[in-house]
Amino acid sequence: GVARKKIALIGSGMIGGTLAHLAAKKEMGDIVLFDIAEGMPQGKALDLSQCGPIEGFDAKITGSNDYADIAGADVVIVTAGVPRKPGMSRDDLLGINLKVMKSVGEGIKNNCPEAFVICITNPLDAMVWALREFSGLPHNKVVGMAGVLDSARFATFLAWEFGVSAKDVNAFVLGGHGDTMVPVLSYSTINGIPVGDLAKIRGVDQARLDEIVKRTRGGGGEIVGLLGNGSAYYAPATSAISMAEAYLGDQKRILPCAAYVEGKYDVDGLYVGVPAVIGGNGIEDVIEIELSDEEKSNLKVSVDAVEELLEACKNMDSSLA
Ligand code: A3D
Image 1: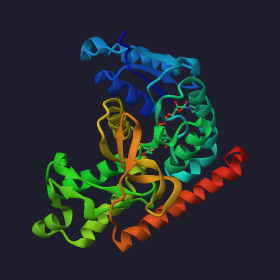
Image 2 (image 1 turned 90 degrees about the vertical axis):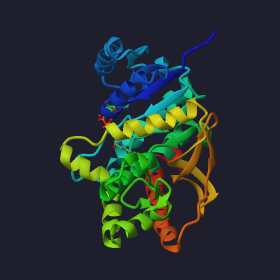
Image 3 (image 1 turned 135 degrees about the horizontal axis):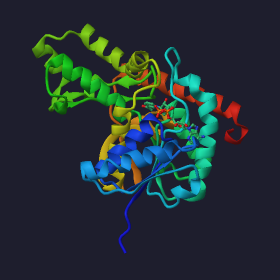
Image 4 (image 1 turned 45 degrees about the vertical axis):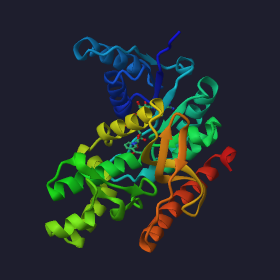
């Protein structure tokens, strides 16, 4: 018979809970909220289930502390770990979240090795690599969410600057999810109009565009500073949901994400933010766009930063070396 899709959310904190609500509203399938905290995922599952009669969705939402309950999941979205506190960099989370990725990777390997896995846990580019290593899944089935969010931040700031609808802005960010990310203005358009052209028409100078790029790079930290406790969760969840939908609907969307890159962008076997095609086979292709020399060297800085984190991971866990 026809079976509903199953979506497992590993980590039921701020992003996990938001993911569950979005997935239920969109009736993407039945949802399992997993966490090591006892009672919390079960409580969130009850609360969210009770939105169903009001919002008119039909989804079975359950909470669990047992990996057996994610068996057969079609999509797994991983937010398990700890988020940043004000003043922390994403890299400060490395040691603790690496151990979390080990248990999550094993849970996935043993219960749903056919799943499409989207990692959100920071530091993103290193954690998605480690999760892939620990789970043993094929590289095309494990991806990191960062580019969709970073691009959305970039697009938001551009829309504000130009006084246009955010719907018309298509912004482009490459590289690692960190302060070295590379917002690419040359590939960013407003309903097809290159940002540079519109900037000339509207009298927006390069210094102002540079400020927008800078704000985009620090976009996560700005929110961490304001919240005072924890990090962004609405837009991160929305971003991962769009990636899950691209997979479940075999949509062949081109989305910027932390994909495994081998032999493109001068990268050899690393997870880094690139435009990738997401369809029913997971990451189906990585698109290598042409970059200016400056963009290339910015990307190299970003790639080097990711490589450094992987070395740190290997030193912390000998099974990764
Ligand atoms: P939070 O609300 O703390 O939720 C994390 C959850 O993980 C908590 O409920 C923990 O109990 C749970 N957890 C901890 N260890 C384990 C474990 N071993 N197994 C299962 N669950 C565990 O955080 P959040 O939802 O706000 O953020 C989650 C992660 O996403 C953090 O690492 C953030 O830094 C990261 N994040 C990434 C982005 C990107 O764009 C990549 C954006 C925002 C947040």
